[in-house]
Image 1 (cartoon, rainbow, N blue to C red):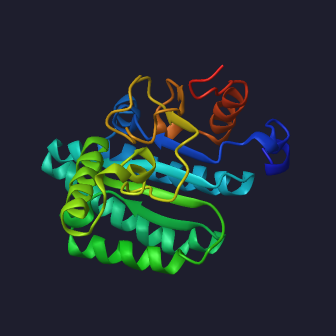
Image 2: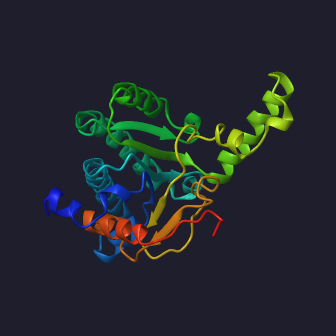
Length: 244
């Protein structure tokens, strides 16, 4: 399907500015095909590239993807090691491929637990793409919503104690400035494929008024048409933010 034909199926004036995706179902995709889970993760990484490029082309401003959670360390050591290698490979490929498509790449999460090589590659990729003006791809690595909120509270307490922050200034707007997504609009739309119906510790603060869209499709099978379907559904909803 050509990009212009795709655009005709959505209201370009009502696009969600920020889409977040819980990329679930890689293991189930592989299992259904009699393949190792690693094959599912690799196929899922290819889907990230495809959806990122398409989102950039249709005018989405921010795409946040859940790549590795704080809970994923509980998985078998071999799978964790493979995921770390795949993340490094993805960042290196993104430096060559996505950067050339005017895409900005950032990583959110507590990266201190990642290897030095991955931390250096994150810095290199972010620096290389920081002056691009297209879509911002946020890759959540070692990310957990509760962990993010706890870290924000600790930093606020520290600033109240040592940096002159007045406790009366602490409100939801200030709290947002202590999040990994500081300066970004909260997600308009959160997508979760694979049939699960929960947020799984993803963007808990930021998702207060996000529209949620669930699908039984496993992430490696998620297509640009599925993304358009989610956007069309989003455009039929009425967001009142607690009002009438």
